[in-house]
Image (cartoon, rainbow, N blue to C red; front, side, top):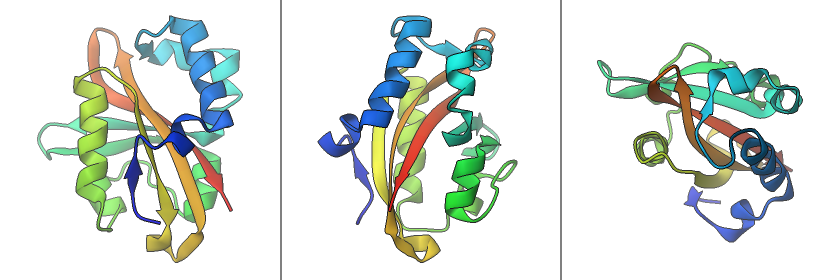
Amino acid sequence: MPFRRDMPRTINHPDILAFIAVCDKLKDGNILSEQDLRSVEILAMIDSIFILKWDENEGDFQYRYWGTSVANAYGLDLTGKHLRKGHPHAFTEKFIEAHYEAMTQKKRVFLGGSLDWRQKDHRTWDQVTMPLARGDKVDETLSYIRFNI
């Protein structure tokens, strides 16, 4: 399954809709902040979350947080690594573009695909990515990802 973006399957995924509902309850459609990540509702989903921080010097995102279910599905922990080094596959640039767009345009982006690059093409994923604020700065993205077998 190739990398896909803004597909109805992802946009209407029940777990993603539930995550968005939690985010909207916390912020009413506005940008989540790192303080919001401490809410009971978000903490209940934290194992399926990853956070990327934009590194202007590298022109790349760096993994700031990598949830346990994400690490289990991928078979590795990418915390601290840059995206281009942790994702050696064909759609890396599109993935970076999508996260950069979510961050700079302050909107939600829906992505999906399979883990074929990890020899797990049977394992598909759907995610929503949105901007994340720390203080007054928005230079991170927050993603909620669900894996399907």
